[in-house]
Image (cartoon, rainbow, N blue to C red; front, top):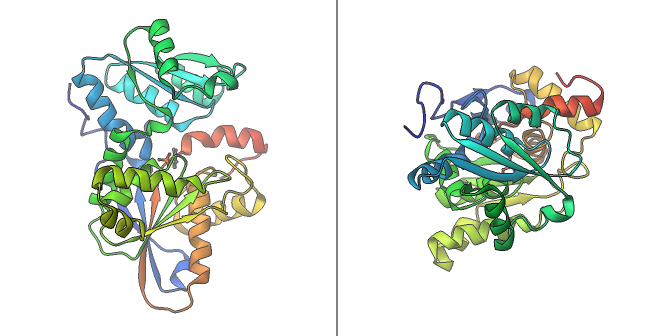
Amino acid sequence: MPLVTPSRFKIPSPLQRVSHLLFSEKGIDLYVKRDDLIHPDISGNKWRKLKYNIATAQHKGSDTLLTYGGAHSNHIAATAAAAAIHGMKSIGVIRAMDADLDNPTLSYARSKGMHIHRVSREEFKNVDTLDYLESMKSMFGRFYNIPQGGANYYGVQGCMEIMSEIDMEAERLFIGCGTGTTLSGLAIANRGLDLYGVSALKGGGFLRGEVEKNVDALFKDSETTSAQMEHVHLITDAHFGGYAKIKPELVAFIRNFYAETGIKLDPIYTGKAAFAMAEEAKKKKDEKPEAWILIHTGGLQGIPAMERKMGMALF
Ligand SMILES: *Cc1c(COP(=O)(O)O)cnc(C)c1O
């Protein structure tokens, strides 16, 4: 079975130039790397992170993927869809005993054949341990294990390809961060762009160490590592109160971005990343022309659940 079905995966993803007043006033040419368009069911960086994991699982002769995530996790939805496309089975270990099996993410994952295994939040804290992996093996038999968020070496490897697809000169690049896996891939493959990682979570200070660890694991040379890390800037104050928290100002920004560019952003990751990018643009003092790139990491599958919570439509 081929690793990807080329007709259905839009790789390389389009690098789209957009016009937005806030940026053009500052002399900024804005581009959006449309990873949200890679596949209708496996959006954005989740495919990047799954690609080499699935290749490895297939190479090892495994027909089942097992992974972990929250009740609205983009990674869970993407893993279920990717497994189905590749003729594999999937198991999702979900944080919360009372997770609603009929919420948009889990009902979608189940429709793709994923077996949902709900565990308590307490138990979920241990999912990254070897003991936990053993307990999963005794429960489910043979499977290929993918950590939460696809945060492993193969995940980083897939994300490096985002950078190699960018065939233009630019000054800055903005990306939303959860585990920092995607930013790690970009930081490794980077050739001199200033990378801005915007934390979707409160307390995103850990991200720098996470990225640095991943960069150093590959280069094993402190000089190269620090040279690459000099181009990594973390923005940890654009989380709007925490993971999946929103405020009217963010909603207004996302609606305006859509009106200006025709591109929908999700409120959990890409909306916050773009908001922080706009704040950086406002700080730009000169009118020196610069090209900026926003990576649209996808995440649109999470919008219906968010709209339900907000009690109104986002777009
Ligand atoms: C998962 C996700 C991210 C975060 O990616 P990490 O590699 O975990 O930092 C960013 N944007 C979207 C839309 C996501 O679903």
